[in-house]
Every structure is written in structure tokens, then in C-alpha cells.
Image (cartoon, rainbow, N blue to C red; front, side, top):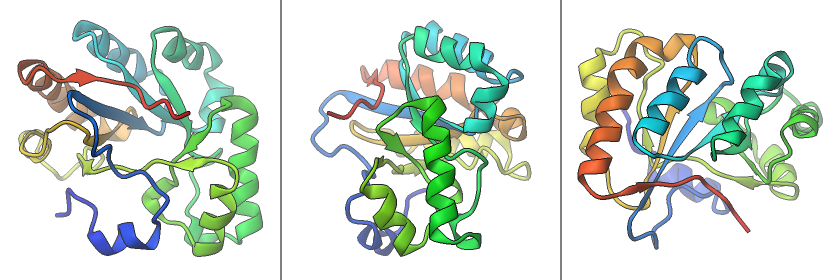
Length: 204
């Protein structure tokens, strides 16, 4: 099970941000697929408990459904990114429709950064989106969405890679609830013990 992205994938998308190698004391938690009323409020409370800030890569359709929850994310000091409007795979769409889906989401999200769902994006789509936004990926993927993955293993996969500059990806979705409920408090506690600061991703 891959927790780190393969090097050849990173070479295919050289302008994407996979981690922040110059960061000395910061670590970057990110959450995909929200806002979700069943999970996002709990995630926000956990982050507050540890004085942590994060980045939420939200779906445009969910922002439309839950605008107050989206506003709450920002109110609590977190940053937001574009995760498309409808959580589509770029492999299954033509470049024009795919890019339009992100542009539709941006009318609601208003962010300079984006993350392609499933990390599935064709070369033409990548080129077109990079003209509009900055792609932010991850250096550690928790696999919290895998219901067959034991919660204990999910936490272990993340803990052994924690270090300054790493970008972690979790999901504030019902699908990830089982693993996230167990893993997130453990990870936040360890980060605190390591004297690292959870920072939002804010690009110039």
C-alpha cells in the first residue's frame, strides 16, 4: 500500500507542490471532499483543540449545499482549495469539460490552489489548470477512505512519516469517518509532541 507518492509521478507533474522542503517547523494537514456536516464540524473542533490550522480542498457542489459550514472553515483560520465541483476523474473526461468543472467550483471557492480528485488528470488538463491555479498534492496519504484498512494501521502509516514540510491528506467525509475518528486525534497529539506547527497552505 503506497503512502508516499512514487517519484515518477512527481516527475510527470513538475509544477505541482508535493511537500515544502524548506519548511523548518511546520507541517500541513489537508482534508479533501468536504464540507460534510457529519464530519467537518468534528474535524474543526479537533483542530481547535490542538491549535492547529489546515487546508480544506472542498467540492463546489458541497459548498453550494453547506455554505455556512464552508464559511465556518474560513472563520476558524483555515485555508481552502479547489477540489473540483463534482469530484470527477480527469481520465474519464475531455479537457474542456474537466477544466470547466474546476472553474465552476472556483466561482464558489475563490482559491488559487487546487487538487485533482483521485490524482487522476491528463496532461492537457494539467497544462490548462496550471495556467489558472497552483496544484497542491501530498507527501503522505492516510488512506483513511479505505474502509477495509484497520484504524490502527491508518494511524501507523501516517505517524512514521511525520516531519517538517510534509503535506498530509485526510478526508472529512462519511466514507473516511471510521479511520479519521481514530487517527486524527492521535496524529495531532504526536505533532504537538514533536513541537511542530500545523499550518494552512497559503501561496503568494
